[in-house]
Length: 231
Figure (tube, one colour):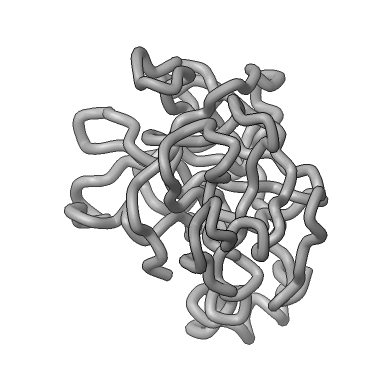
C-alpha cells in the first residue's frame, strides 16, 4: 500500500469534534510519547494506517498505540497491540471491495496535526474537517496532479481551499457514509484549492485487509459470529 510521494497530515480549517465521538481513531506514538501518525482500529488486534507510518519503527518494541482518546495525552490506553474494549473504543467500518464514491460526496478526516498552513503548534485535542470528494479526472488535470493519481487513490479537498490535511495526520481515516474509504497519504502543500489531499483508496484493498487479518483464524471467528468479511 506504498502510495506516498510526500508526507502530509495536519488538519487545516477544521473544528474540534465532541469528545470521544471518533471512537475508532488511533494515535501512533514513539516510545517517548510523541504522536507521529494516525490510524483506524479495524479489529481488536489490528490498526489500519499508511505504509510510510511504519518506516523506522519496530512495531513491537518502539511503537505505542493510543486508543479511545480525544487528546494525545490520555490515561485510557493500552501499550499492548490487542485493544481492550472500552466505552470510548469501537471498530472502524470499511467499504466493500472496489466500492466507489461520487464526486462531491462529503467526508470527514480527523487527526492531531498542526492547525495552520505553515506548521506551528500541534493541538492536544483531536481536530476534524469536512471535505468533498474530488473526481479523479479533475485531480489528474494539468492544473492539478497531472496524471499522477491512480485507481488506488482518492482525492478530497475544498474548491475554495483553506481546508485540508498536512504533516502530522498521515494514516488517518477519511470517513464517508460511515466507513473508512481513505487513509491520509500525500499531497502538494496544504489547503491549496488546486491540489486536494490524496488518500489511499481503502476499498481497493479490502480483500487484502481481510486476508491479512482473518486468514490465520477465520474459521474460529466465523463460528463465534464475531466478524463479517463484507460488513
